Image (cartoon, rainbow, N blue to C red; front, side):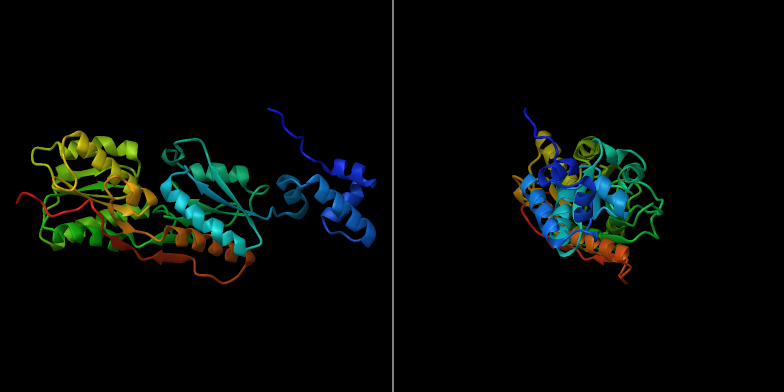
Length: 336
């Protein structure tokens, strides 16, 4: 494959018939160059498509003009957040860099710190981190966390009301008549995981229904990690008639496992998820779920970061409401 060499400042100087120092002054809006020569150099820059490298620009000015959004991987949850951040960046003076490390970063403790140390100082001026793994809340650049770790109490955060959402999801299954209800939890250490489990347990207790240990599992918010616990729960001696999974991708995997075991959804098993990513509505059995305003959360986190960098007063802990979206994956139990 043929590639076009990057246009350099020296290329601009040679084409314009001026020195590199003159081009540098024009690029950096320095005084000492006549208006006519400045206009000429800028026209050559436009004709050649010259862009200063972020690294060089940040070394000169101390700022890159770029905000980062760090995700463990590009999956439906983080993609929706990125859509919101991408829309919000248009209202700032920054550009947006979406960054993901090697696959499996979510399973690597403190992955965000390693990546931030690589990006901060030269490529980004601040970052939004999605579902961090570490509890440390001090970084070299301003940081906002979406779906924070339990140990980031002093870090600016945007999250949803996971506890109330879990209570609502569980009560929906209870209202349909289910009493044998399983729970597939999220990733350990995340505040959302802890709150969703607490909401499930409290809703069951308020209804006077026991939480059976054999109906409980942990999927880590990962579809591949949800297969084993879902299989174990659904092959217990007296399997549940409903399962509440802590995110949509795990809930979809529960349905896949159930069908592989010869069960029908929702006739034999009702399933509720959490997030309302696009996959939930597009799945072959549209998924009942608790909706988070994901794109709005991404936008709010981006604006919060912009305000923090600019020194503007801002709310630094935003909790967004959730709401139940009823689709085809739930029905009353067919057996008492």
